[in-house]
Image (cartoon, rainbow, N blue to C red; front, top):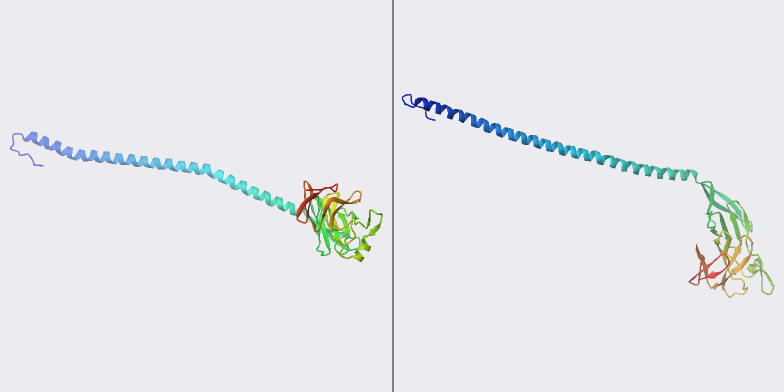
Length: 270
């Protein structure tokens, strides 16, 4: 800016004007800088506040969700612990052993059982290739058959043993045929094989009775354990008879590929 001349008639005015301009040149930048700094500082404050609020929300959300995760983890851990304890208690309370059963011919059979909650349950027999067996629905009893002589034995967890072999067959002509005599003459004759529980009181088995010839026709017979009565289940016959499982209709049997059902009364239905 040009300095005013001393010899100018407006020297005083020009000096004052020059001073005002200089002051403005100094003050305006200062004000602008102040405004700029104030605006940016408020912006920074606002941003800082927003960041703080965001951190608070995240922290609050984390604090809210963390207990839920911890509760879920704790619940899962507790459930696993309970299951492990239950299994451990079951193993601790489960014991086992063997009972000795004596077949009609004197052969000793080891019957395995376990004990859970004070109850004995039959598991089966220790490996014996000469013995076929079936366990009752309640697992409290077992029926065994000797392959060599076709004897049948009932045995339960209380060591009650009963020879349930049909020793003699009486024909319609009142003729007696003994199992022992028949098998001594015809070793391959089927007198009583494959015993299977119908229910707790009745056992079915396969036999070629009532015929004594060699026609090889099989029939279903059953014995009632309370009355000790053997009877032929009718109508049921075929070349090959096998038993399956117990159903609401009775014991399922397969006769030459066809399914039938035997009930406790000795009735055979389809």
